Image (cartoon, rainbow, N blue to C red):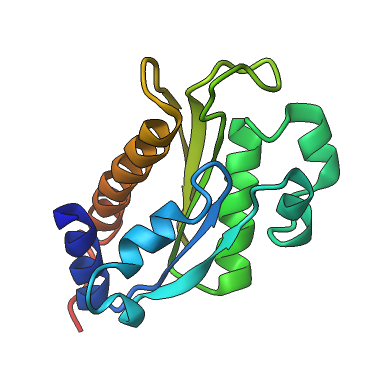
Length: 164
């Protein structure tokens, strides 16, 4: 929770807005951020695209991309973050897609997760293989990891900006 609070404070300080596009986490990232007082100043909202077709319908992920690479892929995570950042008109968007388990899916082992962060400057993809964790532990783990990655990304991208 302390890292989520740090993220909200950092975004508030720089007047940045956030959104998410979540599949395996089913809104857990957005809920985590929203649990911090003051989050309404920075969190515009999130898309939950748990059901595969919703990635196309809500986040405009190309059906051909999904058919070629699957939803548990770097390419899908990239498209989810990039497209949702544009749809929601935010400074930063984080996406989550993967297999929380308990068994393999799309020939990907349980615990395989891909996330991405889209900003106006770049889209970066992060892969995780969470072994030995329960389904919900995988979800919680990647949310906390991506809160940290998002904080670091915001700090790195804005280290040389002029102060207003």
